[in-house]
Amino acid sequence: MNQKDIEKIAHLARLDVSEQECVSYAEDLSRILGLIEQMNAIATEHVAPMAQPETTALRFREDAVTMNGDPDRLLALAPACAHGLYLVPRVIE
Image (cartoon, rainbow, N blue to C red; front, side, top):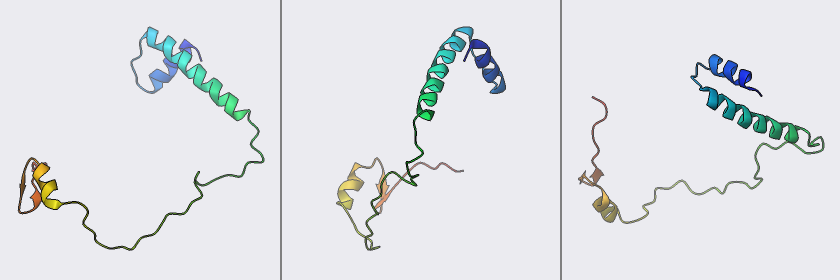
C-alpha cells in the first residue's frame, strides 16, 4: 500500500488523516496484507473445517436456584441499599 491508497481509503471513510499518519498507516497495512498473503500460501486443502476450536461438550447442570455467598456481606459492600436491594441512580426520566 502507498500513501495514495491510504488517502483514498481515508476519503471514503470520511476520516481526516495527516500526511505523517498516511505514511505510518501505509506501512502498517502493508505488513498486515503481507501476513495475510503468507497465511493464504499455506496448504490447507486437507484440513477439515471446524465450527469451533473445542470439541468438548458443555456440561449440563440442573436448572435450580442457588445462593452463593453471604447476601448480607455483599449488601454491606454496596454504596446504597434498602430492604435487601441495591439502590442505583435513576437513568431514565
